[in-house]
Amino acid sequence: MNLKLKRVWLLEFKEFCKTKLGETSADVMNHLLNLEIDSHNMNVIKNTINDRDAVGINDRSEKRENYMIKSGYLYPAKFQEL
Image (cartoon, rainbow, N blue to C red; front, side, top):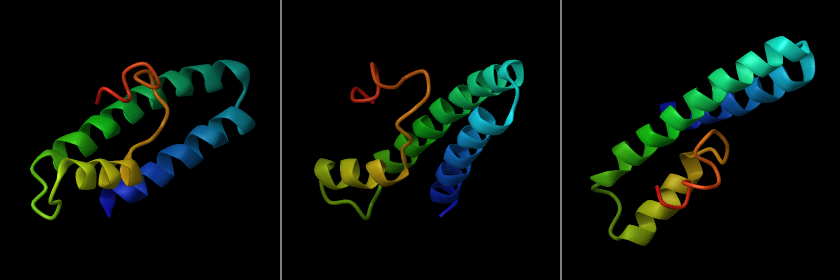
């Protein structure tokens, strides 16, 4: 639940920063949010590696997609490798 809420919060806050902040503030916040998004995605991966509820690798991949954010510095180049 925590990862799902954080995902929503990060996406909404990133959009807010793009639309409501000045250029310099939006640029700085974009860098900070990209780092936070990458950290969030790594936590999702870490938390689903030993997921006992998932039977196979495909089940884990589908679960991860519900929580991961398609943004950040690792997206798109390294996103699929994760």
